[in-house]
Length: 80
Image (cartoon, rainbow, N blue to C red; front, side, top):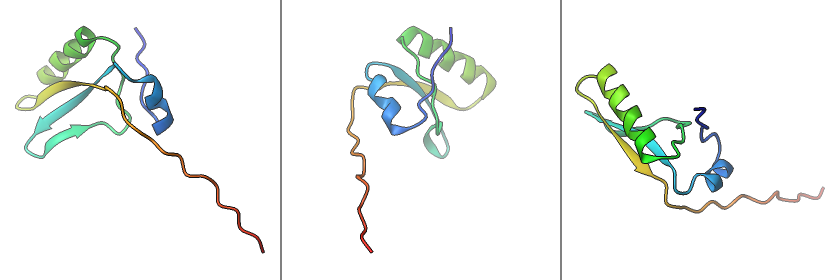
């Protein structure tokens, strides 16, 4: 199964209801700059299990994207 990545704020409009993975270690929570989108909790949990085996002493959690807001800046017209 191919998983899409969140690559820019506009791609978030298609991510509502999906899951991303975060790690938790000494530094606190961390999410990848371009996280993989998991369409099901089962897929996300499987990935957490895989990552935790590779990274001992670090917890991995899956987070559901429920929604959010993004305002795109409008181009500013400059006359000269």
